[in-house]
Each structure stands twice: as C-alpha cells, then as structure tokens.
Image (cartoon, rainbow, N blue to C red; front, side, top):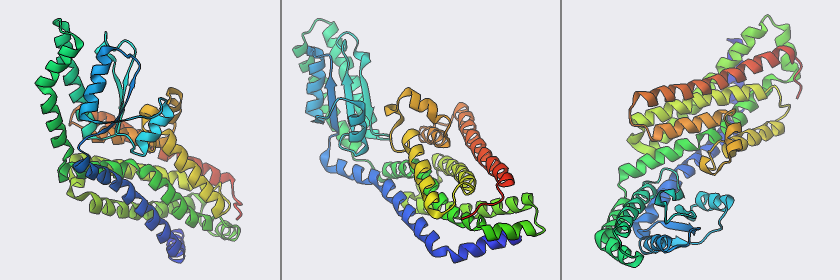
Length: 383
C-alpha cells in the first residue's frame, strides 16, 4: 500500500503536466474522429466521389468504363505510384482509385481499386461499376459494338445509377455515427501509446531516481511486492485514463457506441491499453530523463502507426512490411478493429476476435515480464 500511495502522491504533484498531455491527445482523437464527419458533409453538395483512373488497357472497352465514370463521378489525375496514391487517399484528395489493367477487355474481373476505408459510398461505387460492366459486356457478347453497347447500357441503368449514388451519399445520422465510431477507435493505438508513455512514464521516472531506489532497497518491501504494487498503481491510473477516452467516445459517437460492434471496439481498446501500460512500464527502465521518454514515445507510437495500418491502410504496405508488422501489437489491434467494423455475428468471427485479443494480451504479458526481469538486474536507474 505504501508504494501505491506514493504513486498517487506523485500523481497529485504532477497533475498539471498529466492533464495537459491528456487534454492534448484527447483533442487529437476528437479531431481525427470528426474528419469522417467533415468528409461526409461535403457529400451533401458534391454529390459525386472524386475518382482517379489509371487505364493501362487503352481499349474501346476501357474507354467506355472511363467515360461512364466521367459522367457519374468527378475524375481527377494523380501520379501512378503507390506512394502518391497513399498520400492522396490519406489527405482525402481522392475517394476512389480505379486501376484498369492490361487485358481488361478480355477479363473484366481483373479490375483493381483502392478506396477510402469504411466509406459506404466507395463500396457502393464498386457495385455500380460491377453492374455497369455486367450489362455492358452482356450487350457486347450478343454482337453489339462498343458504342451501341454503351448507349444501351446507359439507357438501362445510367439514370438509376446516378440517382441511387446521390441517395447513398446523403447518409443519415446513424451512418455518420457509425463512421465516427470506426474512425475514433482506428487511431486509438497512437493516442494510447503517446498518452500513456508521456503521462504515466513521467510518473514512473520518479520511482527510478537514485535516492528513491536507495530508500526502496533499504526498506522491508521486497522487489516482487514493490513491482507488483507499482504495476497495479499503473493499471488503475490507466483504467481511469481509458474511462476518460471512452466517455469522450460516447460524447463524440453517441449511443451507437452501445451497439454490439461498438462494445467489441471498446473491449479491443481496453486490451490495447494493457499493451500500452506494459510497454510504458518496460521503457521506464530504459529512459533516464523525460527527453528520452518522449523520444521513445515518438519512435514507438509513430513506427507502429505507420507500419501497422493506423496511418496508412494495409493495402498500401508491402508484403515484407506486413510480415514484420505481425510482431507489433498495433497490427493485431487494427486487425481486430477491421473485424469489428465488418462483424456479421458468426461464430467464426467471434473465435477470430478472441484470438486477436489473446495475441494482444500476450504482448502485454511479455512487456510486463521483460520489465520485471530488467528491474531485477537493473537496481541503479539514475536520472
């Protein structure tokens, strides 16, 4: 209990700086969540998605598809490389990128696309393109020329497609709320890593001071009891921090957070919180001053975010990067997050969900275990 009380006594002394960190990162999380709402609001007036098309086939059939998109969407030009596509999608300069590969006229199913994550309008455009191509190639296979097949296809579905797309883009409040929830929780790995390391890590550095270490070693408190009590203090502090972000999520996302998917996302965020606490507890033995602690926060938070699909969608990451990301906990958080957003209620999905949570818990356990091992041999942590 003495260690526990000492922790919260230190917290009271550092409450100003801790609150500054929490408020700053809470504001960032709200801004990130609201970016989807702002993007959705533009759809009320824009009525069309911003689409980039790369036509590598350059045939009459591919030009028909290009003209169809030109009629129903807002086409734009961007550089034809993965980095440029990722940047344009990340900064929301485009909503949808369509790649027409060589040989498309013979194999219409070879189309490739990259789109904004969790965008119902982009997924609807997938269906619109599929419908258009199915009708168009049916006319082509019956002997019509490209121009005749295109004209007949427009007569069949052209006006319906545009009207339906307009209806779809005018999303109701429920759909906007769902997107806010998904976006809010999608960025939480970076928020939790940065907030927990900077705020909790600063408190732990106090317990690594030379004089404090000497007093602890001279007391009757065993190393196991000391580390256990300190870990529990960190855990209770982090739970309070997590509750702050969940209350904020409820304020931002509304009652949609209480849905099955919302509760699954909440549980996933709590498990990753444990990972963040474990990482913080571990690096508190490796950081000698607040500057080094901030360095660790930036390195770990940003590296995980860029390598694990937090800031950059996984479809833009190379195979080797994704393989390496398997060894980082944020990757499994994002996999769980994606599973939650597409959850349909099957038992297989629940098993996968539990497995992903278990993997994250193993990361947390490994971090705490490594910290305890280091604490046993590192007795003189000096600021």
